[in-house]
Image (cartoon, rainbow, N blue to C red; front, side, top):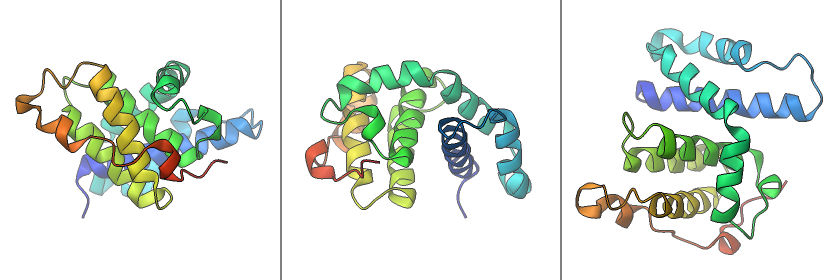
Length: 170
């Protein structure tokens, strides 16, 4: 079984994807908190700490524009709107955890979790694309200098360029 936080990230991804889809479809009733609550409900006993899901999902939803602006130069060949919705939301979660949760989530964990989400829910090459973009973010945020022995940087080097990743543009 997935760890509580891993399951929480899955629920966060599901909630962010639904929220973005409904907003883009013009659904005026789309609100993030009821979406999170609905998606947590079937897993609340297994999840335990539902507060983590709310903090993560609300944080990403409240900072989407800033996260997207930060992602643009990290994948310049891929305009943010052309990145598949799953990949886009995985990148937002990963970047949010890298940039705003470093006190509670080590950078290696944030990147690894994002890559795992991309493997599970993205296209065949999503994990490589996510790994490359977040690896670049990791280095540009200067986190590699703060990590123990720079092991995280070695593990997060891009495996393929965005052109090779085949991230499904939608």
